[in-house]
Length: 109
Image 1 (tube, one colour):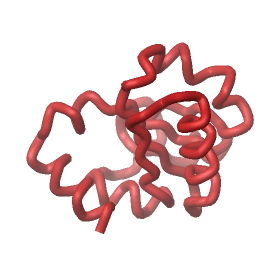
Image 2: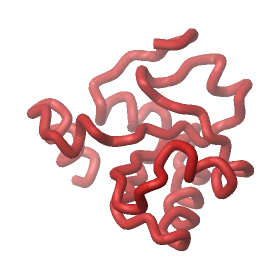
Image 3: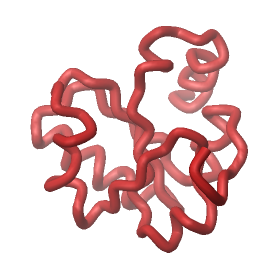
């Protein structure tokens, strides 16, 4: 249900959805194999040290995905623990692609 609501918001072009920081928490090698358009690669093991550069405002909307959903769930918990209030776990790469109606990019896009 959460994925459906996010997809509808993205299709409707709501300002909150457009302003979201889309974060791929997979490894750089996984990211290079394909990622969602506009996603920034902040691997889970470096997320705590790097997120503030991309989202200094803790009220920023952050959307996370990974390969299976496990790392994105861990990342969501980490970010909430750091005080980020608008964190959304999109789950797996496939689920995130469906939710955002996106196709994979192998280069910057």
